[in-house]
Image (cartoon, rainbow, N blue to C red; front, side, top):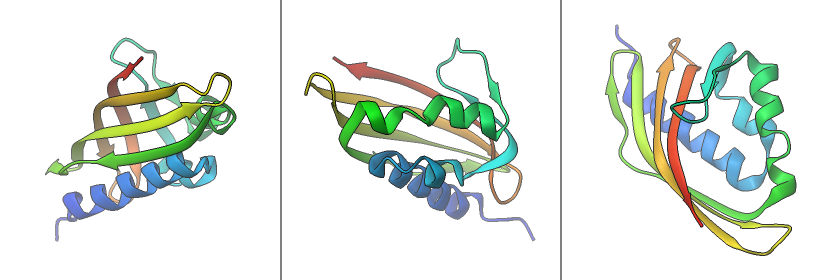
Length: 124
């Protein structure tokens, strides 16, 4: 029986977003397989493996506060899913509000994200 990638994608994105919003890096990382790849932007080099992904996200809670994360409809085909997202947070250093919006494209290994690509932009 084929896994329900749409339902899996909703669970994984909600967990990822809750981790980001709460500043809980371990919760955010729990969606990735140990050998996963993470690509922050279309021109970024892929970060490979959970430790490389952790090194990207580990300082996020020190720079962002009062974060909220939301995502749209999950679109799925085979082991892939995608969604749009919005993350609004306050920069701890300046107090400035940032509105980041974009799309996330993921491949799964049946249970976890094996590759995540984010295409996003922030204002300001």
